[in-house]
Length: 242
Image (tube, rainbow, N blue to C red; front, side):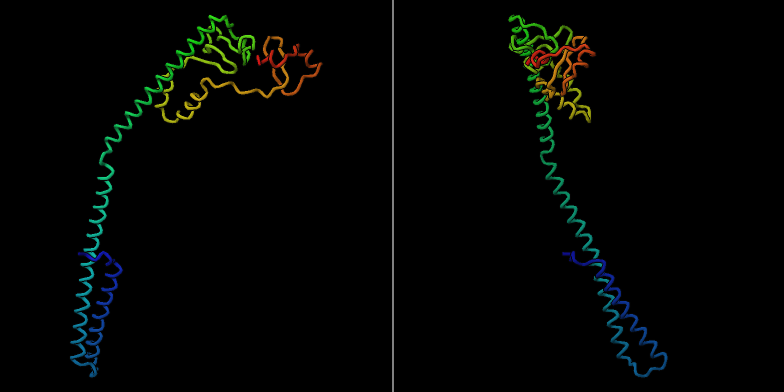
């Protein structure tokens, strides 16, 4: 089994030791050639043996390093194979189940919208039978009609209930647009706004303008401005219907 702890650093250290041993042999030989009689045959023979051994150790270290790299590569490949197989096992089934869930959710969404539209139309018919009038444009119908009103002809609003306005919702608009990247948040906001009451106004003073429209302001107009703008002061109920 390869020793995976052997690294290129170990190889370089072994090669350096072999080079150093070889250099010592060369140094002894040069000393003999230069007339140094203190260097004996035994010295050179011993150093040559050490040099050969160092070279063999360096070669052994190189081979171990190669084996270690091969073993590390194989180990990494096997780990990757395991990761791939673990993920891939049943992935197709998961995708199919997820898509079925998407289809089921879309069907549930469409069914909910259809039920909503049917209720809105049924409520509108009941309101007609009760003689509920068409909205006069105020955010909230008057109390005398139970705060109910029918939508104007040609308007997308079918009826009003308090500050809520009910329309017929087209499921396709949301389903088809949801498939367009970047549209999700706007669509969710639009869906959340369906049947939601209109926001409360902070206005405290109300007037009817010359054209019949309601003017709502936080601070009252002066008598001079009321006369100049041809305004008629209204109560909150007259203005908003509540």
